[in-house]
Length: 529
Image (spheres, one colour):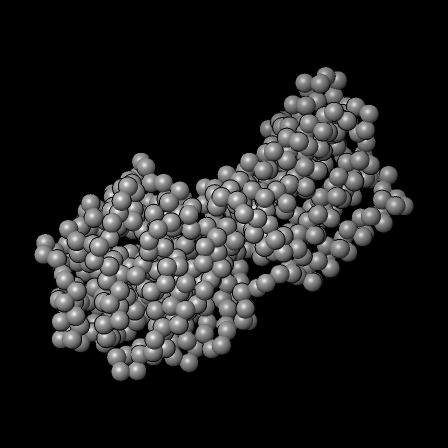
């Protein structure tokens, strides 16, 4: 209890308060960095490794430079200036972070190293300034020994980092926008400058604080500069898992997760498949005789679940890990729970492990172009899914990948992994282009294979509400996995397999009308890398 009281804010000196503010904001900015760069670079292990490494490097440089100069240069005026400098850089980032991301992302470096420069430019300078504070504060602490002074300062800094990490992770990111989180950190730095400046904060110093505050507020009022998503942003937020935006453009409402389109709805015809790949969800109805219960792992805008619940006499369960995605789907995409549609906010693998239900169809729709939960890709997961399928059940995995060559590694690894569990795995690309695209992998438990001719016969004879001739035409009969690994719980290098797709264009085919006689040829929608 005594140790906690020693670090209580009401008893801290000005130097100690500077260290606490430095710890809170440096760790808070590090957590926030993951959200800032994710729409451009994803949130893979390479992104997070870049963030952690750059922050450590900037702090270390600050410690080193500050330690060399502390004896002759440390003063409360210097501490105040360091905090003000960091606050002013935050004001710059509020306005220019998107522009800086776009400018640095075009530098030609190997994809896995691409986040290094943007993270350095955006977060290196303020983190360096915050690093200088600790050795200056140690010099001003009044402790008799060097060891006592440095230990005291770094303990305070660590306490601040803990507060910053937990507050940003569990409170700020889930409840505030990135811009307002920037503003909060800038305000904390200004508060630190006022507290540290104390009675010495007069004249030019006071003017500097006022100017910094005005610039912070003005930056928020101006908002971020740079290319947006296009259309009208109906709603946006930071969830515990991702950045989420709902955008209306030309009569279509699109759900963006971490900057990538995930689902779309025609505002005039909500039951129409806008993204062509969602039509492929009906292919399993040609591969099994009866579909009474369906599970979707991943909800998004709930295009597939809504249509299955409304058009087929089936019970549809949806497992979505992000509660905000579920709330947004209900408010903005017309999703209604009922006897035919049940929604569970939970991890998909945990749900499958704990349930005793049997499904005729499982649709795995939880993958993104640059972020894939590895626990939903492995042999162990596929075995679990196979156990939850009926004897004639089908598993469909919506994979985003290039169909061949560089960028196809994850798709080929998933095909090879599913083939270890299921007797037959079928691959359907969704675009004739060679761009990164949605590729549907369909696995069946039946012993005998289904030929393209048999699928076309069933398409003619079965009334499933959709003519699947176009989709069957994209059946790839000769998938060659090559030397990619089988994904396992103890070794699933998903980030490494996704790495060649970083920076590459992603094409989503969009449909016109849905049914046989008036179905239009899909049009391409290119999404930036």
